[in-house]
Every structure is written in structure tokens, then in C-alpha cells.
Image 1 (cartoon, one colour):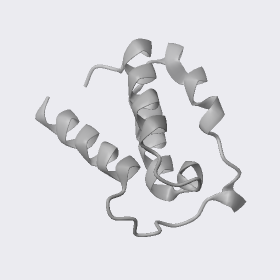
Image 2 (cartoon, helix red, strand yellow):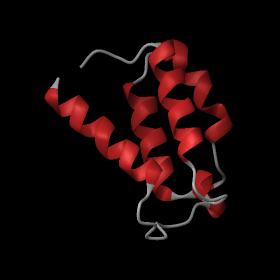
Image 3 (cartoon, one colour):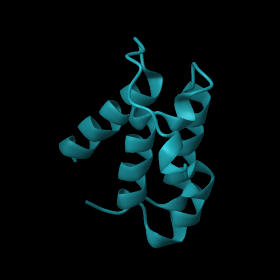
Image 4 (cartoon, one colour):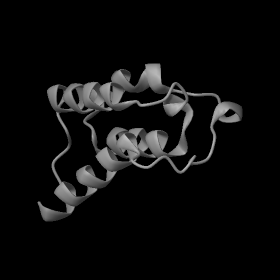
Length: 85
């Protein structure tokens, strides 16, 4: 798979930020799983974009079972697109 370019990463991060239904989303394992995958898939010039999303491990919480879970849904959509390419 081709690495995500900076503009792609910026767009995906903006979409994720705008999807938060709750104030606790930035520390949820659903959202942070998406961030981890995007970071792995991004080119090295984009890695600094993830700094604001770094969370102390003690603050991370498990999935709250939100239905829908917009950050989780974005992650699933991203994974499906990735598989189809």
C-alpha cells in the first residue's frame, strides 16, 4: 500500500475531530486505534500531525459502546477502503 500523503492525513484527522459525539472520544481506544493505524500508514513527513493526539496511557479508556461510534465507524470505513485497494 502507498503511504498516505500529508494532505490525506490532514483530511482524515479533520474528519475524525469533527466526528466526536462525546468529550471523551479523544481518549477512547476506538479513536486511538484509528490514530495508530493512520500513523502507521502515513509517510514520515506527516508523523508530526499525530502529536496532538498523543494521550497518556493512564487516560485511555475502553470502548463505551456508543452506537453509533463515529470514530470507530471512520476506522472501519478506512480499513475497508484500504483492503479494496
